[in-house]
Length: 401
Ligand SMILES: *[C@@H]1O[C@H](CO)[C@@H](O)[C@H](O)[C@H]1NC(C)=O
Ligand SMILES: *[C@@H]1O[C@H](CO)[C@@H](O)[C@H](O)[C@H]1NC(C)=O
Ligand SMILES: *[C@@H]1O[C@H](CO)[C@@H](O)[C@H](O)[C@H]1NC(C)=O
Ligand SMILES: *[C@@H]1O[C@H](CO)[C@@H](O)[C@H](O)[C@H]1NC(C)=O
Ligand SMILES: *[C@@H]1O[C@H](CO)[C@@H](O)[C@H](O)[C@H]1NC(C)=O
Image 1 (tube, rainbow, N blue to C red):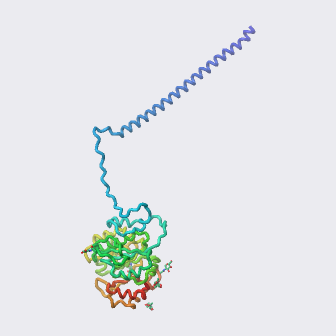
Image 2 (cartoon, rainbow, N blue to C red):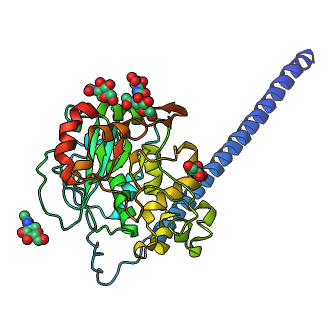
Image 3 (cartoon, rainbow, N blue to C red):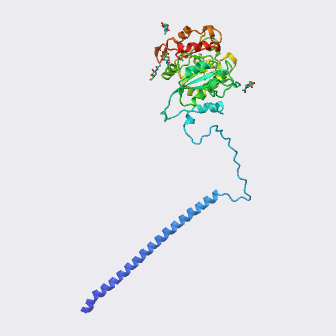
């Protein structure tokens, strides 16, 4: 009994233990089963999603692929693109040709030229040493008649100026002076009083803007002479804070009388200006002039009938009066004599050109950068070719050339 009773606990314990083990095994099995099922489910889920995405990508692939055509269509023909002509081919692309075109001849239309010239850098510091230059814009019919005087004027100042010549397109002569040789820009016909005169002036400005060193721009006629030497003119222009476009309100027939009512509302009679065609301006204003797409087309449309409008005496004057009057000196730097009346200023021939006369043109008082200065006009016209020998004789003495 004792033994049995003794055994009992042992039996009981062993039985109890074995049932425990069975329960644990059973539980373990269950866990394993659950684990297996879970793994299986996960795998099957992944597999499903994989096949779904596979099917989807297969679908999208098959959707983007066109069914194979019965006979292959001919390959699309690419229209040949009109290539821009490159007149100067250099093997290394650099800044040089961009900053300062080596030739003034180009194949751009006026529209292309003005667009190209209207560009201005957004970075204001130059990554090179920029020596500002004065661009002399010669508006002439054939050659520059007073070229020998200009040669003396420019001698020794290379690098501080550039020259551009606009002449009649039919002029085919060659310039004797090396200064003007190869400086003729692609030109068009210019008629007195017509808007094509102003188109020529914008063409000159645009060509000169292609050279990034050109800072001041002065329009010169074939009968124009310098009154001072180059260094005086250079510093006068470079130190100036203003532009020199003369613009007055003239009530006469030759002033307000040339305004056309069709020009409103873009241009009103109150804004209508008149003044000398011979301007001098800085790069900033020159960029504005070539970029003007609002006022100039109005002039091209309504200011183009013979001598009755004279866009060259009104366009810049009106444009500057409307938008850029703040920095405008409102006077021309080119002296001219209107005292004799008529539609053209006085012409000076040989006997009239004297030392005293030239001295008197040099010795006049004007406002310069807000202060009084006894240098007023830098240029003068109209001097005929016959006066050249006298001008050449007096130039060293009077103009310090
Ligand atoms: C210049 O043009 C004229 C006609 O306008 C012609 O007679 C002459 O031969 C031309 N000269 C040259 C060098 O082409
Ligand atoms: C230029 O002219 C001014 C007077 O207008 C004179 O003082 C100066 O010496 C001249 N310069 C040269 C280089 O001759
Ligand atoms: C212009 O400025 C330069 C340098 O700032 C100076 O040397 C020159 O005398 C000035 N010229 C005039 C005409 O003001
Ligand atoms: C320019 O000056 C004249 C007088 O000389 C004046 O009547 C006119 O209003 C001025 N123009 C501008 C735009 O300041
Ligand atoms: C300039 O003109 C004034 C009078 O307007 C005269 O007093 C002065 O002597 C002249 N100067 C020269 C250098 O001729």
